Image 1: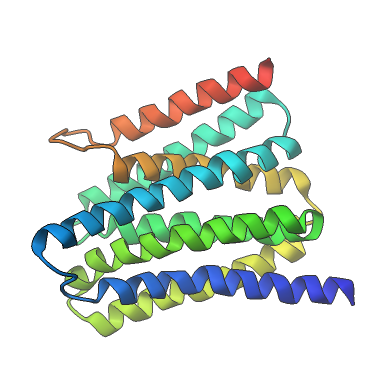
Image 2 (image 1 turned 90 degrees about the vertical axis):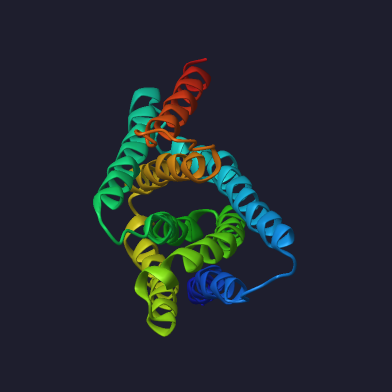
Length: 239
């Protein structure tokens, strides 16, 4: 009975976290918030808020929990870097496409592995899993907001764009269940997923927030941020 209650709790939290994606999109559908300066300030606030929550999820949950399952400093650092490199390749692939939607792709790419890790965490550490679920929901709200502003004009069909975002939200509980049944008994794999997701989130955070000015290789600064964080993490683990 206890496991059934935990499973229902997992489904509830992953559903609520995913629901923040269409909620953010709904907020973004308000055409005008107020004067032009207010709308611009609000958009920047949303981006900064989402970045802060993402960093919180990485620093407070994903890396500590991932490193607990994979205490080897080299393995931990390499997995973090692999996550950052994977998101860089996704970013470059999006940049080459004519109708790319990098915000939407980044939102899906970090939400799904996070939900997978969340499912595995719920069996061993329900309190830590609930904190992660809360952080995922808080990050999904601004990510849904920004992704909608990008996806709706790119698709040209607001209803179809909203359906795509709803579909990503519904995949959250599915990934949570997969993590529950698969990752709970494979602590090493769970740790690897969390560290890989952390590296990708770090890249996405600095890609969205750090000024991109007019750099031709705009993927270089966020990748540098991932390398810097990995260097600090490796030093902390070794010491």
